Length: 249
Image 1 (cartoon, helix red, strand yellow):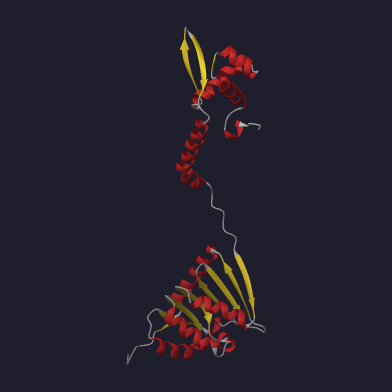
Image 2 (cartoon, rainbow, N blue to C red; image 1 turned 90 degrees about the horizontal axis):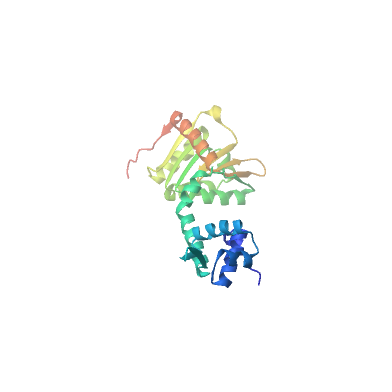
């Protein structure tokens, strides 16, 4: 079997000298030069490297040095030491590498059934924000949408919706039924009406377009999520607030 110790971090000349010493057990410089087939100066340099790695030791007799190879087990120990050191510095190394922006994941869902699946995912979120909800969405999902909104208001951690003015009466009725401080609705002016609604949740945004057939584009991206959430917060502060008084609770 061919042995290649360079794969374990030894130089080529270090490999020759180490293998020669394993066979010779204890040897002088002259013996090593003869056995390894390398130049005397090269042998000295290789021995310095091997001694530094802990793979070779020496003893001195009559003012002459004799060298001895350590057991090959030392190679495994040497690699273990390197592995331990690498683990200790890995956190520091990782902080030096600039973070690659995660590529956005984009999906398009066409048709009422596919869009409803997206709505089901949204209402299970711990936190959700909506812009331009109501109107076309309720017309498209005439029976399912009110049920989904009510279920979302009862199960979602926090929901804030910016609804179209024309959906005010519908949401007021839902709010009366929910009696939840975690479900809030404010209203956009009539000039902001558009047949598109935007939902923001779990580092995702969706844009629902209510044409024929209706479809929704879902984008998963951390930067886009925070950007749209900032836009939402600006609109939320300027929108008209509606909060139903819980009379007869």
